[in-house]
Length: 297
View 1 (cartoon, one colour):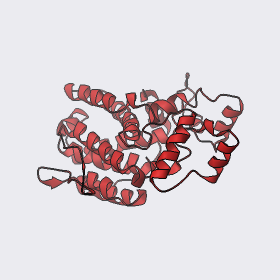
View 2 (cartoon, one colour; view 1 turned 180 degrees about the vertical axis):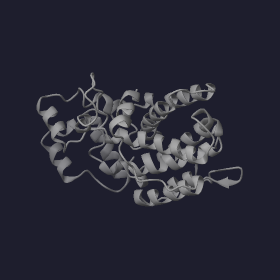
View 3 (cartoon, one colour; view 1 turned 180 degrees about the horizontal axis):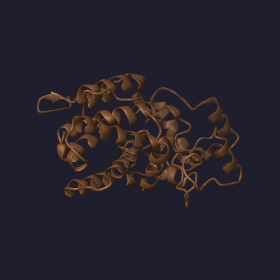
């Protein structure tokens, strides 16, 4: 999933869920609505940072040792290219990439347990760090959820990735790119990373069911409210709501035509819930980035 889901939609969902579970807000420092908005933003920024933390960004962060591993690979980055040229393909480029993007064992089961432990503790110290841990963990859950964009993919080069991409593209009436077909023809396509053969798999319109299911999970784990999981009926999603009121954050995910539309709807939901506009995503820098890197599990 893309920034519009990991940041904008996540912030909207968390903010709306916090309204129905003030215990989380109290646990993290107070009762003010603006604090709930801050918590939602911090969790959402941490979520999106998993897609931002390339090897190049490590050099802007800290001189501490040992340096944490990047969680994203950027083939266009000079640093990444140099590491690949040195034969460093599995460490560090793949390990956390797989852990944070493709491994479902670090998904909802982990998040459910983690948030449950926080709820049981009436007083949580180092709230900022816990919010960042939660945000990074939620990222994995969203990507690997049922019908999520990364479900079934391996986080390292493997021929099964290509086969899965071809299957999912065919279901959408498309086929592998000319470049990928050429690589397969000359016998080099087994080295497909993740869903590189289907780059649009992350678009919300191509992983709708997983996007909605992930939103429902996130909402109910924070709001402590058991929503009915959405089902398909006559081609339409059932209404998602609480106390007779539709949840605008989940409706945004369900109704968005594309990621740009999702950002618009999610921002409107966040404003309606908190009374504050959702700021544009900003990467963590300096001390915030150091805290985030230490918080990554």
